[in-house]
Length: 421
Image (tube, rainbow, N blue to C red; front, side, top):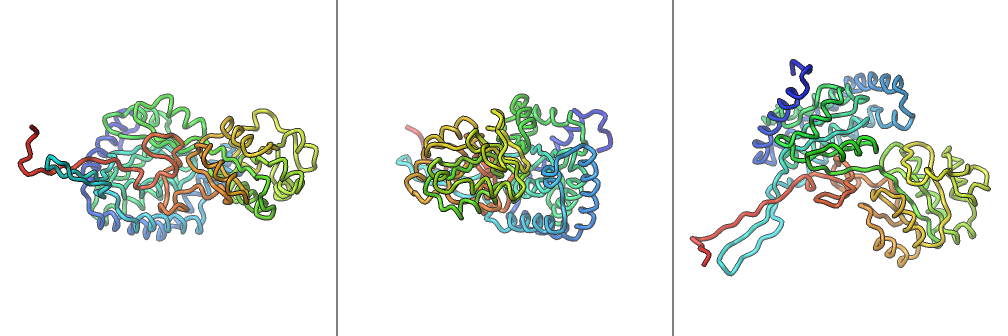
């Protein structure tokens, strides 16, 4: 794009190209989309040194901007993480193409035959922060589902996202698909975000992926429908009958594997009966791993736990920090999660199947887990190849948003000179 001085005009141009590309993608063959993704994966691996070099520029920018270690970890790319991007592209490529899939079909007494089939949404706008791998995930999933996509990555990941996007475009060219099927907004200027939120003629849905500030901005200002990806205020409730060794391993993994992702545990709820029987093994393990545990009055009596402030509950730390609280049974845990959770991912650790069923029944988070780490809240781990985000709303898409969730449907009705009396 030659001129970004006029951002509204520039974004309008991007939108027009996306709308035209979406019309072509709606009937692109599964084979061509597969070829584009496989080609993009090969190009990412071939260009890994250039991507890592671009990422080094972003890391320097992030350090100068004062990003926390956890946020820098979200931003960082190395050869292993690029291999993960390549694997993700290939996994999406090998998935069954959702477009045209028959969801249901039936015959009517009138003689009509009716089919409900999956169809692309059209143009998806994705606004995200920090994590450059979202460029590949979002581009791949939108392409697989027959949608054009406009990507607006975070200012921190500007160079990394551009390098990855170049590889996606190479895949599109090789498969003879329109280059405008996957576009990256080429500016850090936040005015481009404001434009995207009001482009009702060009964008069919916005997917925000980032912190509370970004998602709140999108929900307040968007005129385009939104798949909300809210904060990951993930809880783990360790029930009275939890296996202590299992509980320690799950809690440690959920908090420390990667602290900067939305599936990281932010609040630990410990049943009083578990605490009475096993003491502080959970908070001790977290403290030994370097986690700052902010606990209630009882837990703060022990070494390794500092007193929690009221605003520590319901907070997404995205760091080596977590809140902790003792609760009297599963219903008190549920009440706490209803008050402070974000409807993202919550887990129960227990050997009591009835308590687990009660937890699953009474909570309405997008993802609920039993005896598993919340770090599994990920489209790739759900067999989707990747995800654009975890939708925490209740309309259309919920939980990991993969290719299938990026489709709508239409009805195909066939008659034989059928008339309505």
